[in-house]
Image 1 (cartoon, rainbow, N blue to C red):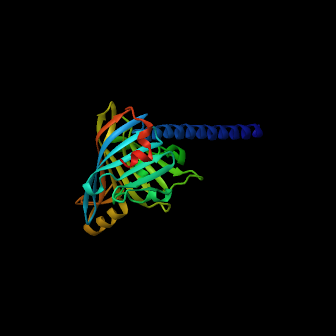
Image 2 (image 1 turned 90 degrees about the horizontal axis):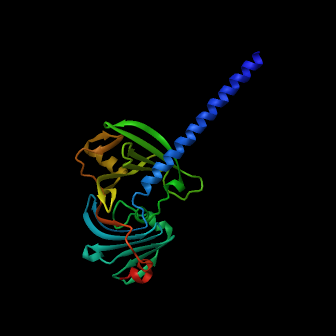
Image 3 (image 1 turned 135 degrees about the vertical axis):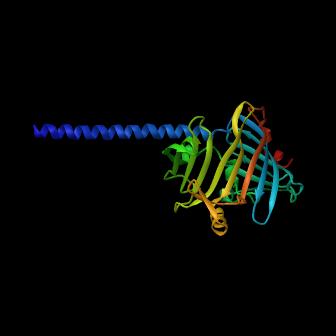
Length: 276
């Protein structure tokens, strides 16, 4: 009888363990699907966009106007329209290959992958941020890390940790979304030591070309913000110390126009067109 009770206890324990593992697997699958959907927010068969980038740093401010063309996820062309001294500067991505065109020197440079992680045009965005494929679900293991109320809004947070073979620089990424409409609100990037390095926020949602998208993306360097907050007397918000005067270093990308599924020829993504 004692043997039977022990077997029953072991059986029940294994049953609950298995149910817990199934529940965790279902939760992770749901997290993967939600993050994948968010990551594909700007992805379509093709797109053409006009974008403004406002850079604010301690010693200067700069505004850059750009036009984007994309065909699927592998072909991307970015061309600067203004200011005049940078007009014509362009980036072409075809598959895994990347070229940079410098009009003043009339020179095309093939860029190594290592250069894509450096700040682009003095901004807080890297070239990788602008031209990378939607690969979060491929490079990271995704799990739900929070579900509940934040600032009176039902919110979910997902933690992304690198897969063992993934060639990524971040120790982890967290993505915060509103549960009601699945809108991304905030994405945070941490180094391998768990220190918060930068934060990307999404706001000013508008319906453009039949799709609801965030038209304002703000990237802020958090290690710089921490120093400013400590020096000037900051405020603690969402677990992060921020400068009380909000005059922080950041880069704002604003989508002025975007059209999805527009006909674009493959010739747009050629080295010949890169120089035009």
